[in-house]
Image (cartoon, rainbow, N blue to C red):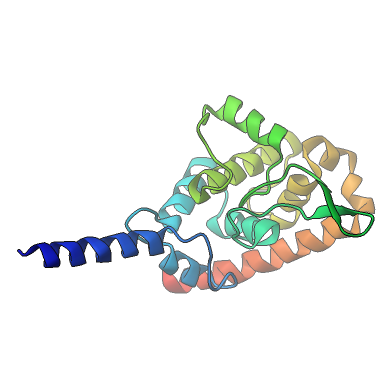
Length: 196
């Protein structure tokens, strides 16, 4: 094989690897399209989602809907910065980051309690595993069914103790987001039945 062919082959492999590692998802409303797009040499989102689902008993559709509501599948999503004097970038509303929008303290607790010390909030496999773990904790601590996306999301948004105290009852944003999570769970579930 000539050096030119080897160089061309190497370039094609590099481009394919870069394309499979892209952090953007083109159709966040279609779980089959997401999994088809993120099924490459270096990542397989469906495999990651199914492993998290198997290990914690939370349906894949619930896990994916949580990510949809939290970050729209943006690996580096963060809350917007507050503006000082209307134009100077100030602090962010929270330390939420990545697919799961997990806060620093919650992520550190997860890493410590689960043994996933090297896990990253910007890695899909790590983030969906965290969400499955967190929803399972909501099931254990608050008695929420693992297939109840509305209440699992309320506990995710309000925290376990906040959920049990009912802080979400006076937060229309939390209830609206939980309704979106429930609706997307139903959409993703129907799609996944067709593309399994």
